Image (cartoon, rainbow, N blue to C red):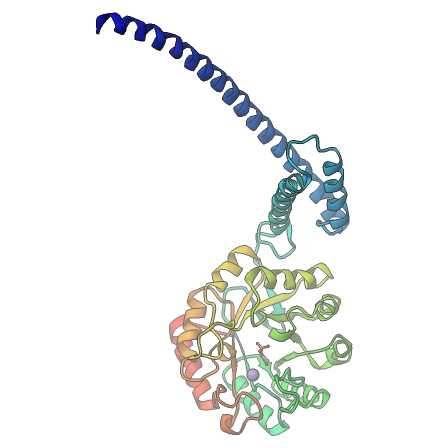
Length: 378
Ligand code: PEP
Ligand code: MN
């Protein structure tokens, strides 16, 4: 055993040396790999800086940050100069991933530089509608019928508003109905009723416009132009609303993300109108107990990320009248600057949204509860 033992030690000794050599080579290669990784990282970071610089330049010039032609050119060039061993498809894939990450970076920076962004404009925007200053601290209430149906119907609600010391009268003249066979609104006749009644009681009119071509003609009758949920991404309408000298109440789309909502508002600001009120009105979810799901978290997020006043339409969020008070309280507690509620002298016979409008006595009771909890409202 001792004799063979020495031999083994010798064999073992020479094997150990080979392993040690291999280990040293491996160590050296790993070190090289680490250096290459560090080098790639340095270049990736450098590349990201250049991309951001290009993004800033494009933003200043108003050019779209994503340029698919340029991206394809870069990928073709890289594939053409590919020395291997990766095949061209792999190279394209790797670089596409790098491009996508860079684009994401540009997008993030762009987000902070948006006109709606609080990073860019730290002070709260206050939207003035006659004597009402939306976003200045005192909650505002926008109330009125879903649709303007008649002079008498609209006047009854307006009178209640005046008696309650409120100013903002809503009413749909152009109605975005799901079915073309449902009541479409009185159109300009409805606007004329709103104006007449509002003037009688010293109120301001909030009403939806559906088409850019109606905007100009509607302006004499309207103090705040509402852009409805179904039109949140009607870019022609958003651009047109950017060119008017009237505040815009922009509703969140039925299935729009907060980011899409902010970009919709950005359209209006980018086209020259800084007076935008964001209105959360519930989003579509699987839940059927309510017409929509009031996204209460959108309120503090919009307040934190933008400088625009935020309104919450409790009526269209709920789609039922029995929970409008807790929703309103939740909205104000979450930081909303304004509330919207549909009020009709006889909700049961309303031509639209009959199941969700409140009658005038219930509206007054609702207001009273809010006043008790939050103090003054305008
Ligand atoms: C409305 O307020 O009249 C209306 C139609 O609401 P939305 O666009 O939120 O559905
Ligand atoms: Mn309605």
